[in-house]
Image (cartoon, rainbow, N blue to C red):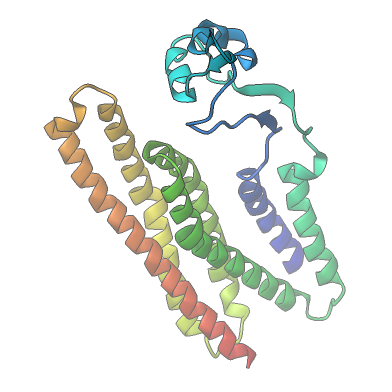
Amino acid sequence: MGPFNLWLALLLPSFYHVVKGFQPRSFKTTTVVRHNDIIPTQQLQGNDRSVTSSASSTTGKYGTTTTRAPLSSVLSATATTAPEDSLQSSEEWTKKRLHNTPVFRGLSLLGVFALVGFSSRTALPLQATASVHLLSFSTWFGSVAYTTFILGITMFKNLPRQTFGKLQAKLFPKYFALGSIALMLQLITLPVLPVVFVGSSSKALGLAFAMTMLNQFYLEPKSTKIMLQRYELEGQAGGKDTNEYKSLKASFGKLHGMSSLTNLIALCAGMAHAIFLARALV
């Protein structure tokens, strides 16, 4: 097996692992109603009919006046009887397409890589390796910057605290797995790049890889476990006043702080490697 074919064999499982985590599902239309909106009585269907008394009509001198209750009171009255998807339509928005499958996406990326690589056979191993390095670095660095400065802050400001925490618990394993795979590819391909910065970059990428692995296999799973335990106590009467809750809160604060710090260290190390790459280009 030639060097280029070996790279394809190594990259295929990595691409499949990454793109599988972002596989879209078939979407369904959802009606989103704000907390203070008013729902007319005639629009209530199914289990919502049990609260039609929330809208009352009064006949007076100037005709009939209909008074409707706010959505908050309607939802509270139907909380025990209405299903969670009572405001959702079961109509399928779009069907799942072949190009949205993880296998198709992975093969497409590898296909472009192969076509461009085979166009210059003389320097194929070097070009292929350098391409893998640049693509893995840009993917990792972009995901870290976006998650740190845009995605996390936006979700924190616009989602309920527990919803935000549970969503992060689903995203972070994929986020750190993507980082570990990309950094591993960078370290493997680094030796073929210009020797002027290999030594410095190996230290920077090694530090980033160590911080990412620490987050992936210890800090993130540990802090997520504690966070979910806190949520369970918050759902119990007087649970937030217990010593166990206070202990969990303190432990979560420490782990979350360490996780944020290690993520920042990895990002700074990536910035250093970007500067080393730029020096090789000019």
